[in-house]
Image (cartoon, rainbow, N blue to C red; front, side, top):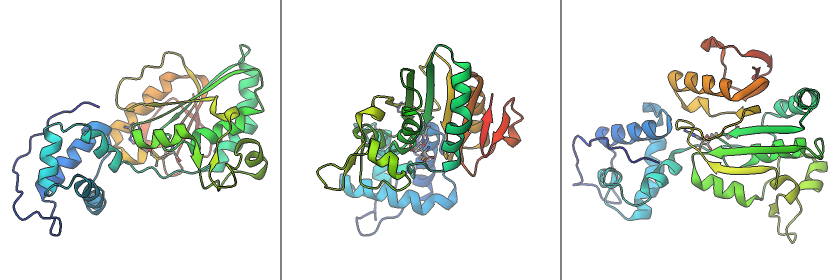
Length: 282
Ligand SMILES: C[S@@+](CC[C@H](N)C(=O)[O-])C[C@H]1O[C@@H](n2cnc3c(N)ncnc32)[C@H](O)[C@@H]1O
């Protein structure tokens, strides 16, 4: 993550005590600009309380003297804090088989399509903005016993390093959304402790990596499918439009783009065809 310098116009630390914290307009402006420049996430006025609460947790943890002191610390490039700040700001809501119709489509339409059109038996899927990993594991459970002897890989990326550690560890205490037959196959109960670890069969299909969608992408080959669901909602039109164009170039002809339930590409005049509920085909 690059530490770009956004000048603090004015710094007021007097009066900031742990019991009496206020986030000035200048602090709010500095923090929202920093989030935007680092992640593309737009935090408007309606997100002021959310920002306040999440930054407050960092201030308490660091035992510092308030919002202005926190902004100064970010501006000074205090070790690792930019990463912690961005981790604190991202919204990571997710779940297994969230928006189930995407996984039904994957199984019933996309997989037969891949089997017909990939004579090299190679499949590449990208879960972009994977959060704590449930999306990537849901894809893995859907394809695992359908593509025996295939070279199938799922790349799962997120900006937030904390959620990626969780995803890589693969431990979950809530399996809501996973059908019973998949639970039996892929989620053995760890010593009856009600902590479940994803089985090796699905773990070996997935590579979790930190990647900022705004940055340069290191991937060389094209993908058969990209899931970028419930991520555009945090971005503005310009960022979303650029990302949609980049996803288009990175998909094979005939490849699929899955986006979130409240997202749409309609206003972007793209070459994608709508082929299902929030499912597009190149
Ligand atoms: C609400 S979660 C969506 C998780 C999953 N795709 C789903 O639909 O269940 C949004 C994720 O996007 C990630 N994100 C936000 N901005 C990002 C960026 N610039 N680059 C990569 N990931 C980003 C967040 O860290 C968060 O984990």
